[in-house]
Length: 351
View 1 (cartoon, rainbow, N blue to C red):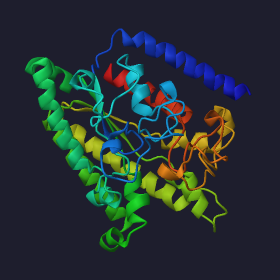
View 2 (cartoon, rainbow, N blue to C red; view 1 turned 180 degrees about the horizontal axis):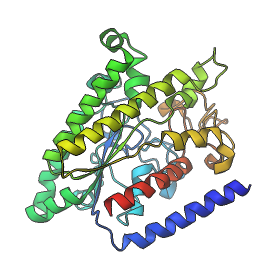
View 3 (tube, rainbow, N blue to C red; view 1 turned 90 degrees about the horizontal axis):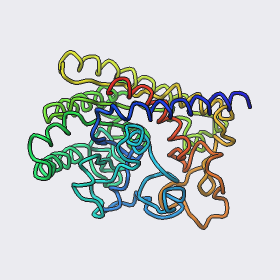
């Protein structure tokens, strides 16, 4: 109980700090690239089975409405944007209910199910990373029409760019289908993905981006789905996948250090939350959680997207007791706690 009080006090103090820095905010917009960890609803508007624009998704979002976020509520960019004093939600670029007026202060190009590897986005017919960049170029043109060239360029250079992806490359592509395994060892595939990340960030830089936060992988072997299929391991975390995540994160860090020399005007922060998320998973009660092995939705073992049913009587009543919302994604409470951990890194760097 004492540890819970300490954590809550820390979050309270951190929130107070966020409010204090907002008045000196130097970040006018949050711009998001990635997968379902940060997608705010782009998949709603594409021909894919990987959607979450129905209940119980979004039941704890404002108004209890499903938005296409793979969560019961908000995802990390929403909390980061709010902490920067911009707005509490980062809208999806393909959502027709928003316009360039809304996107001028933040926009999300992420697509659930995508990865660095184009072959990963092909698995469930989602938006590949290169297409996210094309949408961003289109956004830049709209922004310049709306704000004027000078003001738009200022927003583009001062905005905070968030990148979060990579899980699907391993768990929905490399370890599921043989194609990439026949081409690459795990280490070679990690290098292949890191090269794509390097090239993507370089392109962003040449388009005007100057402030970037790159999120690595969390303990992907501890996702409820991976625990479920780890029968021989007695449904514990799969260390093989966690080791892959750790190795990939290390290579991302090396790549960011290299970029610092190649692109001197680019300021980057490695938003590596592996150790912090692992602490939540191994010591859930310290963060106020009661359940970590299973997710809130349905049986909590393998369901996500359409398998996550509002009608299933096993869906939990209080998601705040759970680390995971569905078999692949964290709850809003987890997102908030992890976001506050990351914001403590981002604010000093970019404000």
